[in-house]
Amino acid sequence: MALPLTPVEARSIAEAFRAVEHSVKRYMDDHYNQEEQKISRTEYDSLYEFCQTLLCLSSDATTAAVGLSIEALAAPADELRGVIEEANEKIKTLQKISSVINSVSALVHLASSIIAKNPGAVVTSITTLRNQLKA
Image (cartoon, rainbow, N blue to C red):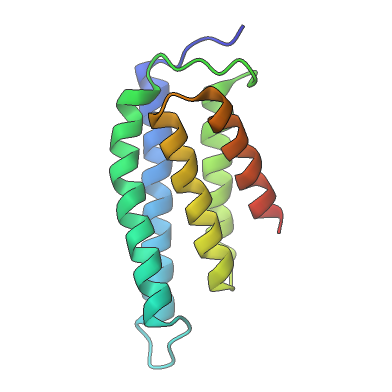
């Protein structure tokens, strides 16, 4: 039986989400604020909206994750933080904007699943995110 997430674990998960938000903003600056723009205004706006959503959700996820028990995960806090950190590192190296948008979208879905306190959706989101990171 998986133990419920503690406040400290929930906070570390939220911090991992915020780290992704910072990485995406850095990506946006690196690829849009140049003479030779590598992403379109529409792509920039999409990423911006996802970043804002991720930032808001990360704050809410801290509170919602406390007490969340995910039976399908052996070590929920470690697995959640691990996949979020893996996504963060991958985003830093992605060249295709569509891959960045898809990864951030999957992270938003994961954060939403945590807030909904839906363990099944959390597990599905983790699987989706891992598949996205392999693509």
